[in-house]
Amino acid sequence: MWRALLLCVFVLLSKVSKLNSHQRKPQKHYCASIIVISFVSVSSAHFFRVVIPLVIPPSLAITVWSILKKDFMVEVGKWPMFTLLSPEEVKSIRQACVFGSLANEVVYITESGEVFAFGVNCSNCLGTGDGQSTVAPKKIEALCGKKIVSLSYGSGPHVLLATKDGEIYAWGHNGYSQLGNGTAGQGLIPFLVSSMVYDKKAVEVACGSHHSMMLTPEGEVYAWGYNNCGQVGSGSTANQPTPRRVANSLQSKKALAIACGQTSSMAVADNGEVYGWGYNGSGQLGIGNNGNQLTPCRLAGLQGVCVQQIVCGYAHTLALTDEGLLYAWGANNYGQLGTGNKTNQPVPAVVEIAACHSSYTSAAKTQNGQVYMWGQCRGQSITLPHLTHFTCTDDVFACFASPAVMWRLLTVEQDDHLTVAQSLQREFNSSETSDLKFCVEGKYIHVHKAVLKIRCEHFRTMFQSYWSEDEKEVIEINQFTYPVYHSFLEYLYTDSVNLPPEDAIGLLDLATSYCENRLKKLCQQIIKRGIAEENAFSLLSAAVRYDAMDLEEFCFKFCVNHLTAVTNTDAFWQMDGNLLKEFISKASKCGAFRN
Image (cartoon, rainbow, N blue to C red):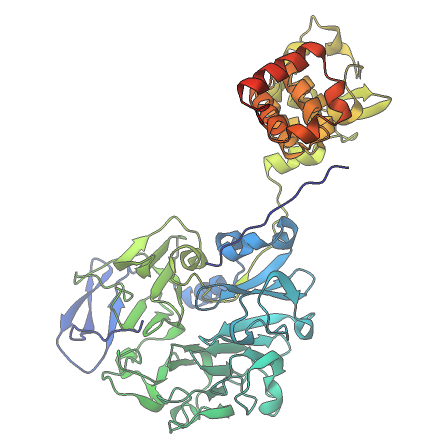
């Protein structure tokens, strides 16, 4: 019995400086239907507005949110961690999140609703209960069957998620009570945070470095965890061990969205107002100074605009208005504000913005589907929005963020559309659509003449009007076995070969007869993988017989390196006399018989 040994190798793949330049407040000017900006030196606001054309439809408020909630086709394979999974496992993924200080932890949800995790498991952030790192996915039983609508993570890391039923679960690092369970012990498995907030339901969650937030259907904001800079919004700097409602200026407001920077918090009210609290050393709260805020403070500089989405980077913030205007403020040490060194910077209308508290990267998607990125991108500081070839902002973080984490819970659409190659593969040996049958050892193989003529010169010649086979509906094949001929015809439909080494010898014979050079190389690769002491001389004989010089040299070296063992096999003594003489002569020249 032949066994292949598969070796799986994997490689598991600063502090923000303050702004040196004086912050400036943009003023609106209208010129040829383009909003441009000029600056006046004022210290009343710390934000910068990226300029965009006035080509926005009146219904943009609806357009923006419908696009944001739509599931985008994203290939999770762009994140290196997913190379550890089999193709079947990757195909089953419907939601996923890559996180961790080196982007080496993963949580994903399958089409059947099962939840798995794998990776380094720093601070028990995988929630598997054993504290062990793993390259093989482990199921998180407590979450299976629960539809996850929001997921976020911290720097510890800790993980927070909300389900469709409004339940909130947390696990992982808990040194600052960021899990909201009233203790500071690490969470080995998911903890139901809802039990600590009188069963309040959640529609969205967000995590900073070591603090957490949740948003209820009623628009209430709750926060807990590390509070050294006031990021919990309680009015003090004492850590908050359990969820506490963020009140003060948000008391009478209904929040629509929340976001967290490393040690700051932001919220958007239903009237478009923006509130910020927590650390403000880089101006990331946008309130016109660098002082920390212990309670929510409204951004007066955004008065008159209606913000609908907000995201936070490590120490910068992006906001998107209902007119498709993009505002940015806070740290700019990597160019993450996208302001460059020019006064005016026109870009297309924006419908989506992206940032993550663990990186210095910013991204945006425009109405016409173009994706821009700026900030720290693979070690480079890109200070102006750079047009990419990507189709979604998630790809920016997969390929250019450091670490390559996900900025949101990624939803993967199931694509039922078949490519041309997939359609051909499906129709191989289909009796419903075929117009020709091959009979081999009494078994039929259903094919299509057109495909065979396109893919193989042998058949293109065979199906000429002066060949008798052109008129036949069934063609008998006697010189090859059924497995060999079936594999050959399947190769014409799929470009792949799946045969054991002993049958690959027969396919090598066919490939030689039909002058199929690429197939010949594939057969040689299969035979090389299956070589052993017992069959080495048989394979060497086959290589010589079919003029496969590369395979012949490979088999010869194998025989020489295992000379004692292979000379004791039956295949050695059954070898053709001339070939045996040639082998001994060639081996002696290589010094194989020296003591």
